[in-house]
View (cartoon, rainbow over the protein chains, first blue to last red):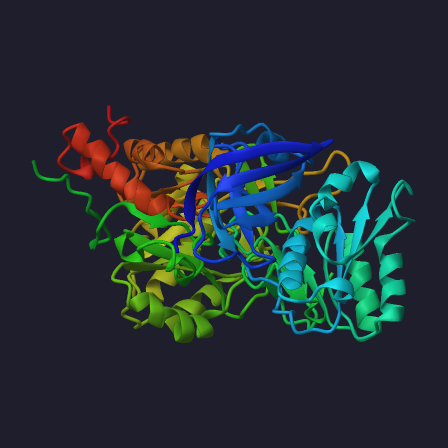
Length: 261
Length: 306
């Protein structure tokens, strides 16, 4: 399947303050794998120049609509939030690798911080749909405050153990999502951990898991000019000291032990 | 009506069209093989090769600027031995011209790398990177003065089996003088411009955006600088000029040809639209047809001829 697409905006909805859900008509041959991303040109102008990578949040095979959940942070996301239903956007994708198949694991702990939630939602949806339900998936959802709860809207509907932490204490645990991770891993030391979120959170998740020798996968974000492995701009350091790996091509999902943050 | 000719000739070599890829923006070609038909390109210019493999600079390596991009990748590459063994065999099969960009931190490194490439018949031309702004060594200044450029090109040319095309920097006082010196030293063609020296700082975090502090500026922001440089150089050399700098589509290609270039290279545009080159070939053909040109070479220097 070609990676070049011109996609009609099928929906654009502000779910909460600065939190948007955009749906793009992008019929795929198969269900998108959790962790893969699309590389969006938010405007046809040369400024901003780069595309913006967004994890795939959800996909509806009936309508062929790929959904992206995003928060307005900078110019790119602000321009994207101004796209209207019916507009056309230039899209490359789906790109990148995905989380390893985890359906056969006994216990999954997913750690999502803010805009790191979307790829983990898709992972949780897939795994819970494939029989890993009930108490087998714990989703630790880190938000700034209850204002960001729309980011977790669909998580609420999955048959999973969902726990919140907030920076301001307005929802769930008052503190870091990694506090919850430590508690959870005390209870389930044989779990597999998957995480996506801000760099500080990922560093801490990695440290906790490596210390306890727990298998852990991290989905990384990076400034990503090309998205297809050519510019070498989005690299992350290899843990074995042998140079770098490309977030767009070998990633965005990496075993935590293989990279340095 | 017959379709207009797109073929151009540089250093006695015929290229199917004037559209090439700029070094460092197209990997070793194989990265784009699944996206576009590489055989359609006028030439592929591969990523700078050095004597040893280089991992490149730590991240962050790139930053977005107004209609532009700063990069300090640090000449990350597989090194000349792996290039010859692992990359050239793929390139040979493509049926397009192959230009190998060679970088070095000192003259001896250029000579070493060229010596390793000599005799490989899959190579059509060498582009000599005497202008990378991201390596902190004496090598940085190869194209900074006419004297140094002359010495470098002369010594490389003496041992090089292939036509030689030095790539010039815009970060110099006298680009005309450097171009003239390259021609006198035996250069078969000249490509320009490499990136502009640049830097960016985040106003909120107060952090410098590149780990290398400074980097090379590319993209549409530098296009007028490139056009002026080509115009200047075209007035003092007879060898063909390959224009580079912010080209995004066929209109930019036409602009560079009008300023005196024989061919052009697409750089940063490959990052934004991986199919920009093949689109530009189609669009250029259509542009010429619609305007009753029979040959793309008619455009060369048309805007600057007295």
